[in-house]
Image 1 (cartoon, rainbow, N blue to C red):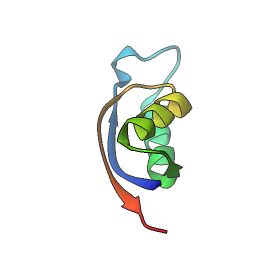
Image 2 (tube, rainbow, N blue to C red):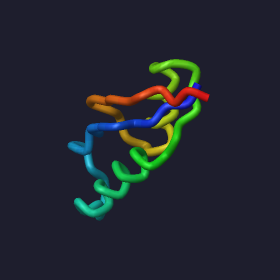
Image 3 (spheres, rainbow, N blue to C red):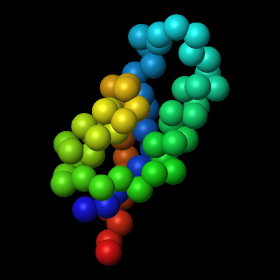
Image 4 (cartoon, rainbow, N blue to C red):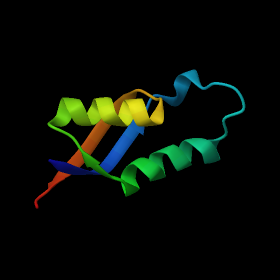
Length: 66
């Protein structure tokens, strides 16, 4: 299945190093711009967490029909 994330909130509270708001905004924008391939919602969350390195607080998405 393919998913498009429409809204996402990451847990940026435990920021590391020299991260700025610009970096956090880029992580969010990259996630929203990507079409994600996953088996289901749990797999989608796992893929985004793995790709971004950040835990997700909340997520909204839509399924892309082929």
